[in-house]
Amino acid sequence: MNWEQLLNKARLGGRDAKDETGRTAFLRDHDKIIFSGAFRRLARKTQVHPLATNDHVHNRLTHSLEVSCVGRTLGIRAGERLARLGHLPDTVNATDLGDIVQSACLAHDIGNPPFGHTGERAIRAWFQERGQRYLEFLSPEQQSDLIDFEGNAQGFRILTKSEYHQYDDGMRLTYATLATFLKYPWLSSRAGESGAKPGKYSAFLSEAAAFDEVCRATGLRELAPGRHCRHPLAYLMEAADDFCYAIIDLEDGLEMDLLHWDEVYALLLPALPDSAEVRRLVQSEMRDGRKAALLRGKIIERFIEAGVEAFVANHEALLAGRMEGDLLHHCEPAVHDVVENAKQLARGKVFEHPRKIELEIGAFEVMGALLDGLVEAALSHARGTVRNYRHERIIDLIGRHSFPDKLDRLDDRERIYQCIMRALDFLSGMTDNYATYLAKQFSGMAETRY
Image (tube, rainbow, N blue to C red; front, side):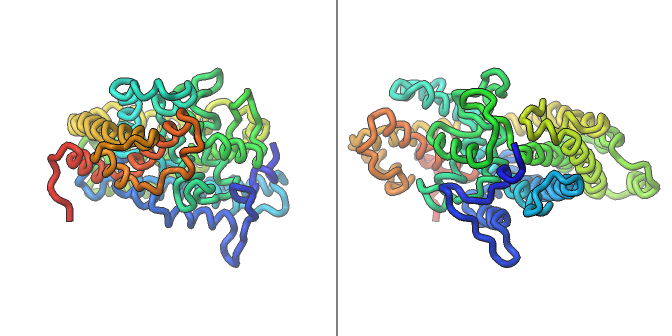
């Protein structure tokens, strides 16, 4: 692969890029995402703790903004190093790489349904159990999109189809940004094949054409039929997410009194500089959460340095599409171990807290109640047999004109699939709060909303 093609600034659909004074095509991607409704709704979507009442605890919006800041710095510094080594075309600036990674980082969680990964599991479980009867109408490839529902693929659908220009290339982002977003560049039917991470993929069958277009336009190497290697900048996006998770989950754990400062400090110590400033801060009387916040910048700086070194050291393998593992596993041992140990501590003490477990159980019930109504109504709409008034009103709620045009020209299987996918668009776009409210409405138990 080559950087000139990998950084293709043309837009989905073969549209020409527009550079404005002070705003490149890649910065326009950033702005399109920031101003989108799908991005704005991340403010009320779960990061780790569903429906958290503590304003200091992260949600998907604050997490995405923080990841984008780290991703931007990773991209710029990696770009500067590559430029000095003569690896970048003369027409490319280091800031271009930073802008692309920043935009992909902003969008990396944009497809998450209500309640985050718990919401994903709830959708999969519903189609494997109560919703299994709907699968008989679909092809095996279409079925896999539902029984292995993935927020990454829903995000690609939002970027390329459902947001802004619906069914007409969506946000119309640049090929470079879309390719960087593809963390798992294959469809659901390819997930689990040799070399593909089981259960992980970045595009539904409904977006196969857009997926293929992006891969061709950026020259992503095809490793096997239907399975491509990652865009090199996707590794920086993933690293930024990993680095932020390592710190954010610990900070939230301290904020909610689920973790103790001593264990957090002992975990972070190998990546902290041995300086009088750090020792003074650690020994101070300030509250634990503030200590963690003040150390954050020093930890993330160390992470970024290690990430850039690993990226440049593996540049040849990245362009050849044969990089093994993620970028974190190529970072220096101290950084790799701190991030992995932070994840393990969070999994053991933060993710398993009884309050979180209680809310996750409730989330399954909320998602199940919504899917019962939405998918049944979508099926009736696809068949043109909506005589049930309740189904009619659900279709009106989803938006009668938000379904694809000319459904009657599709065969039965494709029509049903497209309508179910539209119902999942509606569900995935909900915030945690609205999903909880609407599930109560569907059951007739909610208070009137004004």
